[in-house]
Image 1: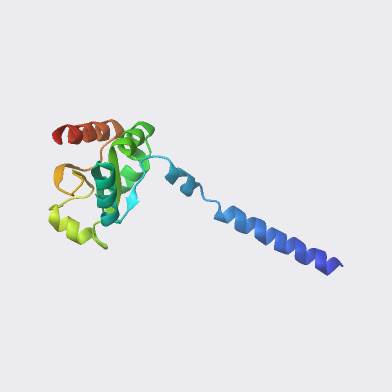
Image 2 (image 1 turned 30 degrees about the vertical axis):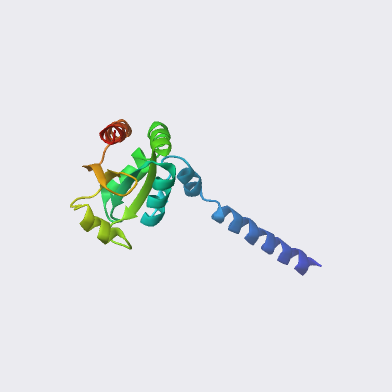
Length: 149
């Protein structure tokens, strides 16, 4: 009986540890902020056409420090998120993988991060380069919306 109790304790302990390890605050944080489609340019174009919205493209590289800061500091901002989630189809693409190199060439991206706004067909409206804060990001988005009128 003692061995069964010890085994059950071990199993319960393992289940508890597994459950705790599978809980990830990062997943919860990703639910906040700007909601991005990851790497699926075709999906972004289709969504933009369906919803008649412009596309906001975060063109990044995995090794880029300022790109990481944008994701950590700017994109989670509640005001920036509310604005971009309401007005744009948002997509983040690693320019070194998948469709990234083709978009890199199409939009002549020469620095990271590059933030682009396109129309629903993927035609470039405007862009900016480098790390920017939430207020400047919102101003950039408003500028892109004005240019499209």
